[in-house]
Length: 224
Ligand SMILES: Nc1nc2c(ncn2[C@@H]2O[C@H](COP(=O)(O)OP(=O)(O)O)[C@@H](O)[C@H]2O)c(=O)[nH]1
Ligand SMILES: [Mg+2]
Image (cartoon, rainbow, N blue to C red; front, side, top):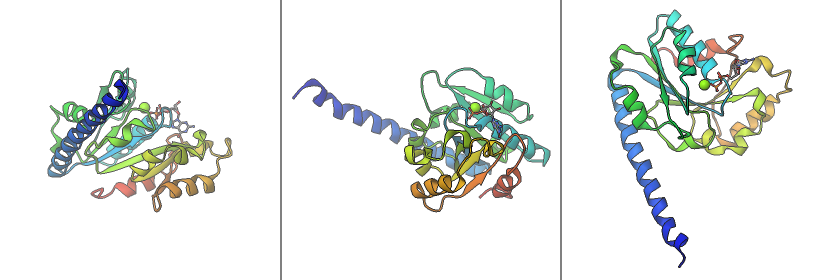
């Protein structure tokens, strides 16, 4: 047996342990969120799909309507997104992951350490922009949104099935650009449904506000 054949099972075992520990922590977080009455939504997508723009609009509209939203945002580097989101006046905290391409439950737990969850109705968690890594990591969220911008192409659900499969709702973003890029709605819808039959699909533009009311209505009143 060569060295690689011997070392391979060990790598698998370590990875399984990391995922198991993450799942346990995520379960604890989910219970904490439930006890505090906060509804938690996470967002995953490739970089540039419009997570931060969609979230800034969401936080601003919720604040205007008297809600108590907050957000955590993950990136490899910089706190640019937290600065953008903070314009909504909602509490926001950046998590920088260094070289890690996803958020883990432990990072969420640490970021919330000195927050009083009882003071929140909604917590949004923007994951690191990546269509692969975040799919296996439960963050204790109630609902996971996967965003797909019209400029990315309709085939992405077929190319990255795991992230679509591990999400609850698909959000097609930047619909104000759909015509310019000849976005094929039927193909996009069919591809999403092929990967995850019955998945709800929302269409939004953070730029024009289109679809934002329908999205917020899907969260109200308790977001359950
Ligand atoms: N036209 C248009 N551009 C958008 C929309 N949402 C985001 N963008 C632009 O897309 C780029 C990436 O958006 P960002 O929110 O940073 O994406 P993230 O990396 O997924 O957080 C930015 O230049 C945004 O201004 C939208 O609804 N319409
Ligand atoms: Mg962002």
